[in-house]
Amino acid sequence: MGNTEKLLNQIMDLKFTSKSLQRQARKCEKEEKAEKLKVKKAIEKGNMDGARIYAENSIRKRTEQMNYLRLASRLDAVVARLDTQAKMTTINKSMANIVKSLESSLATGNLQKMSETMDSFEKQFVNMEVQAEFMESAMAGSTSLSTPEGEVNSLMQQVADDYGLEVSVGLPQPAAHAVPTKQQEKVDEDDLSRRLAELKARGSQHAGVQGSVCLGFCHSGEALSVDLSESTSGSLIELRPLR
Image (cartoon, rainbow, N blue to C red; front, side, top):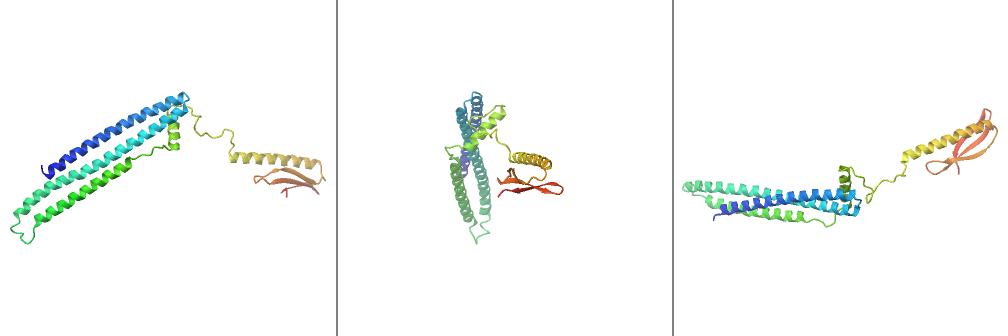
């Protein structure tokens, strides 16, 4: 069996392996969908611990699927290179026959020996690339046993949203009593304005009254006071921080 036939057999074996990896990827995809359905059923029953376990299984199956697809893709790339090499080998043989017919006129150099040397070099180079591809695929296939918490919560929320389910146990929810900062500031300003209006009305009724009245607290936590002092036009109201 010649080198070309061996190379063609290797190409067929690699193609078969790639097809097997693609089948495994499709199987993992089906199992991932099945685990998602289990997440949905567990959420409906209120079993959040079980839903979390099923979500972890679904993410793990999705990771396995991507690893299988990635390895199959790299094998396809190797097959394409080897196929090109096989075709080039056939071309080289044809060129070798042409070289033999020209040996009589090219006595100054042995081109056939040079071509064989180049073919051997290219073959070894391809073998090194194939080994590197398999090593990268093996390293990419190693997955972590722990599943990120964020991915689990995200998948559970996605399944709940897809089926219109309410999820409140086990997932972080915003506090219902929390008031936005801008809204709280607006409430404080309205309260201060109301107190100031009351003091103005009180000052107009009691002209000549002097003193300092605590109005409230500003946003920085500093207490504010109102000084009431008599003036020719009535009561002068001055708003200043308490020291």
